[in-house]
Length: 232
Image 1 (cartoon, rainbow, N blue to C red):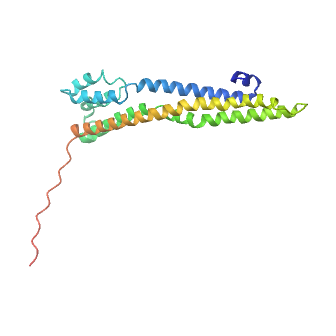
Image 2: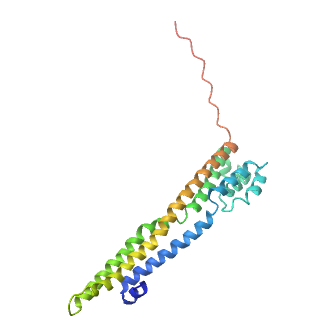
């Protein structure tokens, strides 16, 4: 009793469900392996990259110093964008007509969003596979049981348990297949979600610190006018 035996005796619906579960399993494992490689350093690489940046003497030196630590290229894009700020500060462009603080904010926001898109890539697929794979397998099981009962009803002779156990047991394999696809996807989604959340918090804090260092200080509040004497 195996999936191959079920597919050999199954119809088009059973084979379609099995093919769909196989495609979901392959896609989820590709994402799991890719994100495991991307997040192999976790928050450690991000913290080391940020520390290397603040220990640098200049922005140009910082880009060279943090490159060996930032293997996933999550902090480096923001530093490169800051180094290219002077090229975008020309008054002939729309971006150069705003003040420095707004330019720095826009550049850091774009770099942060690009890093977050890389970190969040594949999370939706893992969540979708983890939520739908058990139901897809259950659909295959229900359809297999229905086909088994119809075949048993068409047979002549007495009704015995062995005529039911075999076909129904083969149909239940689809449910196990669906769970085998869903469980790794759910576990990976939860683990990667925690790591991505910590890295996101560190990147947001780093972008805020850069904005405070490079942005123009906020205008001081105008002093209040002296109080007028009360009329006699």
